Image (cartoon, rainbow, N blue to C red; front, side, top):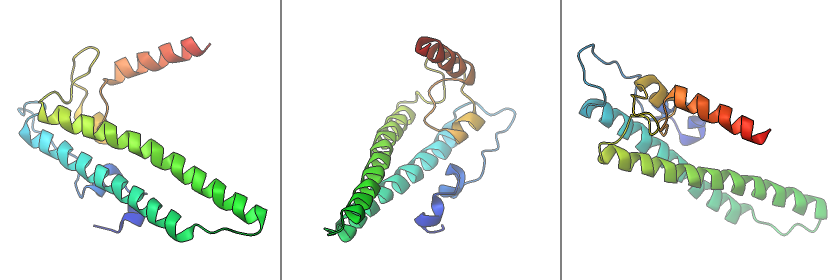
Length: 149
């Protein structure tokens, strides 16, 4: 597998070292093979995010300097602030990944939380943490836009 620095530009399938899932016509949706496919994707994604967190901690420890120039100090503080915000979003994503892995273990993965239909393999490969089908997600986004005015 390529180094993690290069993984930032890779899709989730490539990150996990997998190819798109090819299902058979007579194959049951969310069978053990498909569950394992998504388990691998989610685990690789979680590992990559955790490595980024570790790298940030190391970077901030190593690069933390008390610059005498206020502009240099402000630039460093802004850089650290942006990095911490990114890591906070990733921390929330890790929680969502772990919740999704739990859903796989509980055999409650791949079906829309709103209407109960299949979310679909392709959609789940694009966003493995999806818990709504495309129609329900679209409706939720429309409602959200209407609420914002």
